[in-house]
Image (cartoon, rainbow, N blue to C red; front, side, top):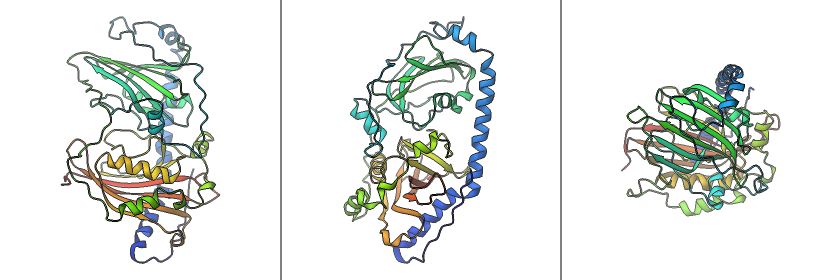
Length: 401
């Protein structure tokens, strides 16, 4: 799909120059060249999935026969896994997109605790997968990831982190009736993994991951730790008028005609929009877990990230959550603006601009960048009337004092 955008921006002065810059960056993320690059990446991923499925077709019967066994191979490397507490008839929870809360808040309300993905994880876990249970012991990791991703089962079981392994075996008819799908594969040369998908009692889609590996191998998964703020010893800096701007930015009245939003999830289910998996590797957790990447500028080999993500969460709530996640890194808010409606003459209705900077949690450097919350008003594309956030950020080896 090719999305062409003509941005009409009036001549702005003073602080509104920032708005012009913001609209230019958003336009760059949505222009033809970015779209074509993204489509190529998607085509390549789909080719990989098709090839994998072709390879698996010949092994389907064999895989089904061994899927319920306690041991995977004769060498005994794989031990029996604990069956996750999935349910075939989960408690019915009606999802109201007009009252939706961010996914991590919903999980906490359901009694879950949010954990960091442990260091040394040999799988490329998609960003939207939230670890809610986990245990890392010698030679073994078990974890339960839940996620809210608007794609079918046969798509999310083929995320390309599987292609890092070998001997991939898919089984869509496991012995456990409550398991939707099961995947087994090698991890490196000395590890094996099982991923089982199902629904929890709240109708969340979850993946139970178990990895077994040999002592002394190149796999060493660190301990599972609760998600907590980092770098709190440093005094974070905020604008003098932060509280005033925050009140405006997180008010429903801030955004342009918010009742007219379209659902990005509906668009994705209808295959009207391009969606790419966003991986967790090296990426700070400052984005909503229920936002979905539509475009990324190709910055291969660069320390710069430019992405556009859309969500069904109301933009004033999404702004609040983004600021909360930034505060987990004790981020400086270097600039914070709410764009007055009368100054915003573009189809891209930018509402809030946040400039931020923070140290990464590993002490290796810092991130600085900007996020722009906006809505694109053009009935000719599936992006019309959707709530989105464009972020451009750069990594530096400099540490913020």
